[in-house]
Image (cartoon, rainbow, N blue to C red; front, side):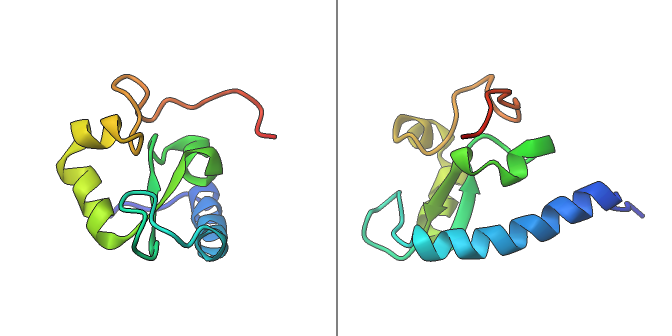
Length: 96
């Protein structure tokens, strides 16, 4: 059985709270620009500090989130997904 470390559990707890509040403020889908955003897409991955790095969060409706995962090249062209080589690469630039 895989166990979640205490640190990761803390990160996940922080994410659950922050993502709900973030979606209230960022309520329009950044994919179709019509629907209500209901999901946070991590455009650069979720490892280490990326899970809670809001610089790489994208507000999407369910339909657009599914599209990003099914069509990564089109998602990259639309600016919804990072370029190859950037996935799960932590950005060390300080968050302002």
